[in-house]
Image 1 (spheres, rainbow, N blue to C red):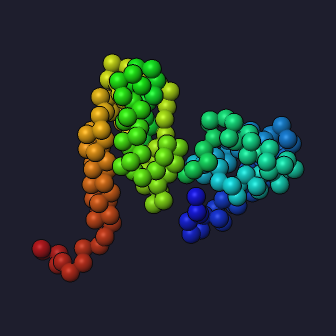
Image 2: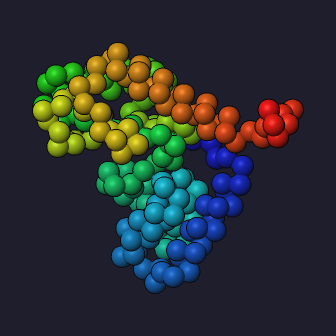
Length: 179
C-alpha cells in the first residue's frame, strides 16, 4: 500500500523511538514489532526494514515472523473496520457469502484496506453471537443476521456517516449569522 503524505516520517520516528528504548537483541523482535504496531496501527514494509536494521536481523526473517503470526497487520486499519465472522455457525448460514458481499461492495479483498483508507475488511474466527449468525462487527458494533442486502445497508450507512462528517468539517460559506 502506498504511503500517504507525511507517513514516511511518522513511521521512521515511531520505529526510532521504539528502538531507542529497546535492548536491540534478536529476542526483542516480537515485542519491538508489537510496540511499533501499537503506535502505527500496522507494520508497513519501511518499519519492518528499519526494525531489521536496528536489531541486526535479516529483513526476510522479520517479514516471515510478521506474516506467520496473525496478531500483526500488514495494512493500515481503515477508519471503518469491518470484521466478518466465519466461525462454524456463521459459516454454515452464509458468512462466506457475507464476506464476498463486503469484498464486492468495498472493492477490496479480506485482509486489505481501501486506497482511501476508509474501510478495512477482515475475517474473524468467532464473535460469540452464534444465535445471530451470520455476524459482522462494524466499528465495534455487532450486526446480526447479515445478508447481502444488509451488507448494502451497512455500507450505505457508513457512506452517509462519511458525507455528514465531511459536511460538518466544511465551514459555513456564504451564510450570515442569522440564516
